[in-house]
Amino acid sequence: MQTINLKKFGTVLISRPAGLEAFNAIRSQLNPDAPIQIDFDQVLTVTPSWLDEFLTQLTDYNGGKVELMPTKNASVLAALPVLAEARQDFVAATVRRALERMQG
Image 1: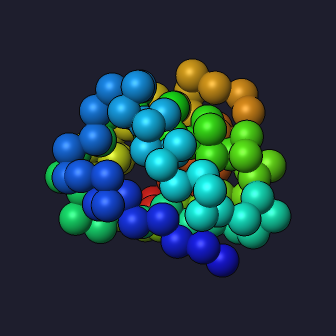
Image 2 (image 1 turned 90 degrees about the vertical axis):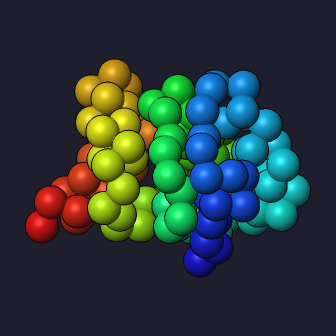
Image 3 (image 1 turned 45 degrees about the vertical axis):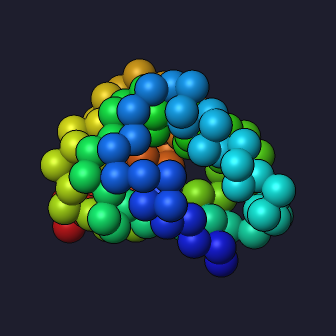
């Protein structure tokens, strides 16, 4: 399993174009057949638009084999339900799994 530490893209992750840029920056390092986990450690804030764009690209790239690591980050926890409600695809499924794990 590969782990993507989002802090490598900064501590404030905002805007859809920046989410796409982040994905494009790491795509060549990813194995499309391997599961990937996302680590939010040391990220101060992330907007739903950044997360939506990044996760859309990532889940499309590897067929939805993405796991979000548990976090207590308030901005992440606020963004995830927005994505879960707005989508009906790999991103929504990934987010729903993460929310279920984080809520116990």
